[in-house]
Length: 73
Length: 407
Image (cartoon, rainbow over all chains, first blue to last red):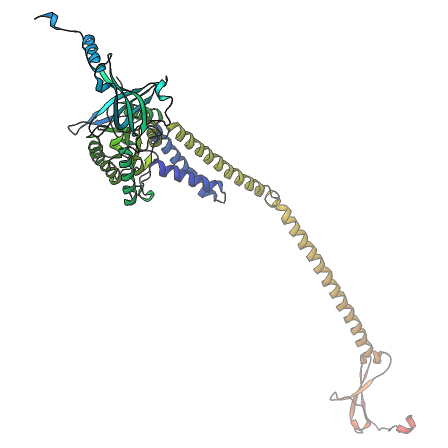
């Protein structure tokens, strides 16, 4: 069972990987493995920040339904 | 309908103003109450209300009158004022023109505030240990405030500016008046049923009465019981409410709350970009250093000229063989010489040599060496060995040599 990836956990894992690599002393095979994972994580984080899910502002109406809400106009 | 019956609004206000101005009781009034909605106009005039539990009245204290005040009035301050009542015709509202004002101890609301604060603090509602962490990258934010007004506009526009993919759900509430506290508390409760990462509660600036709902115990408890982290943003930077103390985080303003709740997405992108760059540089360095090691190895003499090593061994082997040969032949020579000398010795000792020189030796026919006279009998045949064969002879007699003579 893989843990659900969140932006925060991904950034943390990515930072850990970079720190390990920067500290040196990593076998080449392991380093390549880390690198592959690092690139994956980096892409995930980037996507998470830029993937435009529709930005919705809702208001809880008196009837208990969520309605679209706008402060403009 | 007789049109003459109708008077204009101005005429009405003028009439009332005249009535009031001429009322002696209103020419000198002394009032005890609490200041609220205090505004210090830039021209130096003070506009405010004076209120008690059930009622309030507008008041003005002009700059010429207030310049001698020993204190700076503010909302919630209990005061004694003296002045006169007059009507402001433009709005038809009457107000007290304050000539004199002095402090009358602390305002009741402040006392209430301090008492509640102390009680809730003792109960642990403000404990740091109970504070929940505000998530770094919320996807959906609950907002508990009035659906109209500056607060909700500021919050939503700030969120959109910083992270356009964040969603919000507004739980509309009253934010002032008697029912506001209950309304706020209820909506905080309702928000618990939605999948939201953080709740912002608050409202824009106002008098202490306007903000009072956020000082009510029911609101404090709703915040405390929220499973979702709560950011409180009530009024301006200088306003502190009970909500601020109970909430997991206090923001100075509604805009500030949105800034705290939503990280600027471009900052995050830059951060991810930087880590990514570090990652690539790191791996490049690692590959480089491995390459250097590899080159150093492939450039080593052993790999470049393996025959060299072989030649050395070859040379050593040759050398050994040579030495072996020398040792062996020396040994051989020595042995050969020894043998020769032995053979020489042997030669000199050989009886054959003696025979050459003319000596002979005698044996019996049976081959037994005759050394003494007694070794043979008269008449016995003997063999005399000479250089080129043997002479068979018969013993005719013998003559023993006297040993003394021999000497």
